[in-house]
Image (cartoon, rainbow, N blue to C red; front, side):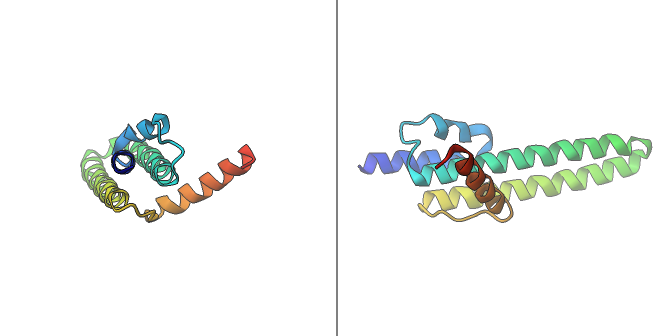
Length: 124
């Protein structure tokens, strides 16, 4: 049983690192509530920051008529997004390693709403 807990802890922790949340969906322990929580929250985190980086890129393109503003705004916004993403990853990994189901700021609330709607549509 200890090995199983170690697997769940490891899979839960890596769920916050980029696209690695997918591994938890295919794991043998995929029905474990802790792993499901962290995997889903990690997926929402990844998707949210992918959208933010894409919007940042669009803003960068939109500001191409003012190169100085493009560089400054693009750099600062990308830096802010990257720092926020790194902090969320750290918070998620720490929570997973402690076997706690803590909601990440903003992302956790979105994940709960999405999970609730998904479960309702599946009839659970």
